Image (cartoon, rainbow, N blue to C red):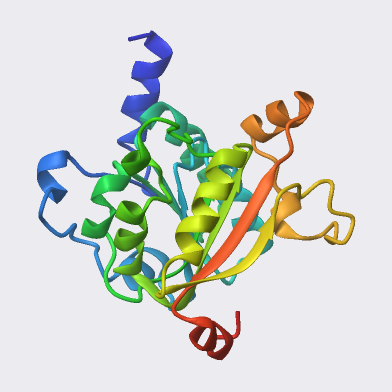
Length: 234
């Protein structure tokens, strides 16, 4: 392990906005902040939004800057990447941002029923040969349902048309989810307003994909049936 990575891991231990739980702490157990992130960490009752597989937290940080009345938590298993997001949030004094280092498979240990309003999944590994590892597979969607608000929103942004189409099919075949939007090329869609947060944030990987000429796709879907989504105002 390089010296810079070791330094970052040590510095992570000092960050008040970065929570690192060991496998033993959360495997078949509830994390001590489950159900109380808003009150104990953010000190308010504002909506809570997650970014899964957040990497350096680029999406989390930009959304937090744009929406100070919303709480954001970026989640990733890579500590060296999370270091950048957590450090930037502290430098900018972004009080509506936190990060969790954990595997997404253990996410139910961190959040309780109806605690989370929205989830962003940005450029995940499409896992072409391992369906169960896709973050939008039924296995993971069922986990998200355990803590999302009724009518809560899930966003998927990816350069993988295969993952886009797969996720759309999964959602359309479920009675407990409603597809709200499916865009196969967000930058080629002239009807999408420039201030749309879907376009506002360009992650490191997204910029690379665009330079390679890959279209960026987007899906937005909600928990519940169409009437539930309408009642929730989404």
